[in-house]
Length: 312
Ligand code: NAP
Ligand code: 8YV
Image (tube, rainbow, N blue to C red; front, side, top):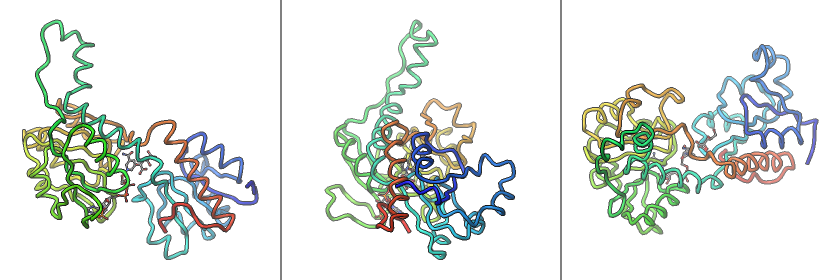
């Protein structure tokens, strides 16, 4: 439904197909393109009924007194102050499920890339090193145990693909899921000790900050491999780097970082690391589906219908 009397705000660039769908339906303002965002908000903030994008904190909500809904692009909403939103009766939606397959595919891709050093092997050929001899031998996924931290929507898709790689799956979360066939650990350190691989796919935010501590990483051990496709905040990043540099941890495949897009330079020098610039959901198919779900939530809201994927 098109209703140009509805004014919505973007504070950052969005996927082109999503921006086009929003502009077709509503009057869209782009704060990130304003010369003086503060002055723009003071003059126009009271007309804004919806925010589209991510990263909304209390100060922005203060400047948008008639905000009704925050439609976030992404399933993780750790960068939205949901407590303040709830207190102010502002609805919040995210984009779950449509990205499960893409993130699970990248996870398995990163695992194979790390186990077999695929990025390094590519460089080996390009740099002509093959002419002087073969690369060393590495490991494989077959027969290994993968511990999944966060057996949720995406975690379950990773588990299914890991089983297809002939891996044994175990998991940790706050509670056991009786319908899941995999072994449950109520203690993350114990799971790490019993696993060859640790895959992190639980939400970011205060509740999970650095739950993958130095102790957990040490339990994973010198041959242990860690994969983070969740948020950088879940791992003690300096401890991970230290252990990777000093043989305390076997390897890491990292799609997310504590202060991304900044990546601590120490990681760049390591051969036992595979790096990825937050690409979990980054396929055309999935990003289009995420954008469509964001728009569908706004449409439902302004039609007075139940939201499709509300978190608040
Ligand atoms: P989900 O369905 O909500 O699953 C999250 C899982 O984490 C649940 O199984 C939950 O189990 C567990 N969990 C939550 N809090 C926990 C805690 N304090 N300690 C231990 N386990 C905890 O979420 P999802 O859709 O799979 O997405 C997971 C996360 O992936 C997102 O929040 C996002 O940050 C990240 N993500 C990253 C990318 C990327 O591009 N790299 C893309 C999409 C998503 P319990 O309730 O039993 O604890
Ligand atoms: C990003 C993600 O949101 O859905 C999530 O939680 O981490 C990703 O899909 C996406 O890269 C948009 O910034």
